[in-house]
Length: 306
Image (cartoon, rainbow, N blue to C red; front, side, top):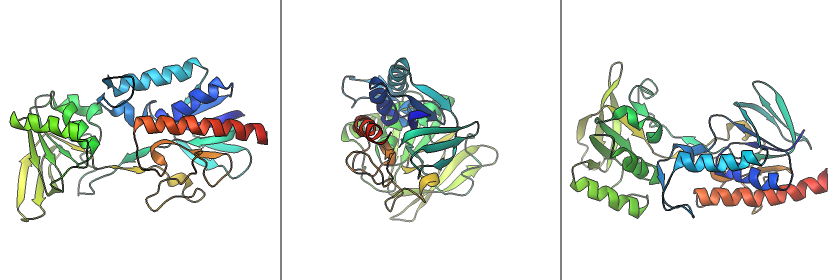
């Protein structure tokens, strides 16, 4: 039995691990894909203290290497089931059932879909939810990015030096994303590298075997326009990955886990950190903060209860 099981290897989970391992606790990390979470899928990061600019995959590797050097054990698998109501917490994967004195849910969030006909058909055939993962497949081609938040702006900044042209499709005429990033995009607009398609939504995906274009409708004029593209990057937000715990953990109306200031959930010995938690700001630095705070409370919890 481990002292702590952490499900999810983003900055929040890895920071929890680093603090706990330094306190000589045994820690198992269960990660579905690769450590880093959304950070590993991000291009350049310019708002994390200590680095003027760093690639997301590089920062992820640095944090994971630090945790691993302290003795972190890692299992790569999907979680099938949680048994977390008892004193000993259990997590079932395809290969084994793991036990721990405390569990940390660093589940992150998954990309939202457009919910347009044939969307799933074209995933991997022109549609992507990760520009840094798939951007190089569209070198010197025309692509569109859908969204108005930081992710869509960052995707455009990553793609602009790879592709021939970007259409940024947004349902409003104002952006929620970072003004600094938006100002950069305005400069690329002057160069003809980016075209803003505002007050518009994607209503139809075009193509047979592969995506060849989209139809967009202007919400104000109701005009429909066809845009010929080779790739479509969907960046309209994320939803918390809480399906497996929704019947036992307290969630808010949007599915995010409710915690106290120490990252404790409504179940003793169960904590939530990072993007899956209800909070105002979801950034790398706040994810790391969650992990540090949680680890301190977990160490005290274990000492009092085991």
